[in-house]
Length: 501
View (cartoon, rainbow, N blue to C red):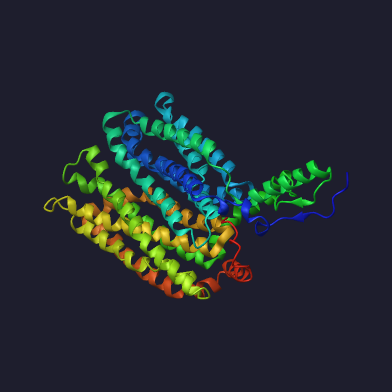
């Protein structure tokens, strides 16, 4: 048996047939559909709790503002969870990280659901806090998309997963209104758990590993085994992570380095920072507006189920925005094919559709604000929500698409900044929403409160146009994105780019 020579490290270019890029379409979209359900499960955990808050106040004798803390702390720590899990999925693979995340989140539902028996509000807060922190979130699920689809193929799959992210936040209140009226509040938790376990089993049984580096590791092991079986000799071929012992990952400095990667990108990369703030503040405005919906529809004496159904226009808006986005995808593909050397065609074209839909955000907020009066039919605020939902979906989708293109194999860390901004601001504003609307409603009325949000939305529209036209300058001030761009220009165009981070 001969000793092996110096190790040869395989790259993705050495074995394209072993990567998820090479899977048939049915396998890619089957995997994507289960990831769709995983993302809905994560967002359902965040949104459905709100319908149990009145029951928590009654059962445990806490204030309404205290009960809101269970939602707020989940969202704030969900923001950190998205950032902390993303880089580990790059090191160990998507599947084990998502499985670990789903398992821990499901376990954290149990103390919250049992709170009515042990009479402990602290148990609710602890369960919600760790449930948020253990949620891997969109940064990992979006990474799965980039593992399977090249930069020129990824827009439709990304749009599909983004639909699950925003859609999951709407399903909660729609079904929650009926739960709140007819069942004990703990069923808002048990339904989360039942659906979470179902999704985890689906993911375990039917979703293969997609992370390219892990698949290259497995391919290298097959080569070594085949050579040993055929000749009895050891091969010197290894995957990119195989020669790094597991214990090296447990060194505190290494753990800190991996965990800090997404935050460093958010801080150092101007593209990540600017796009994350745009997406985050957009989502924050909509989140604040949603907090006023029960006050608005109380004007028409909506019951709890009717209030839940009032979220349907937002859900329809997300579906409509997804459908309307499809023509722009094909338009952008043609543009990129005709202008392969144009940075604007390769990058900023992905933001083109946003120029038409972003203005719908302040328009929808203004409609919602000034039709929130019993003298007007209740359908008009819902029409405002339709415009708001289209804008929210498109802002999230286009900013994610731009980041994935710019950061290739490190997009999970990059898009983590987007998720962090959205969830962190939503969590903080959960605490602020009630005092904000109480103050405005007392002095000026709900119309003025939501008009302020619409005015801020106008600023975000201006920011959208600035980003579209100043994108190349921002990329040059984002050293990591710039270095990846130069690296791609030296790579053979016949080989798919590295899988997303």
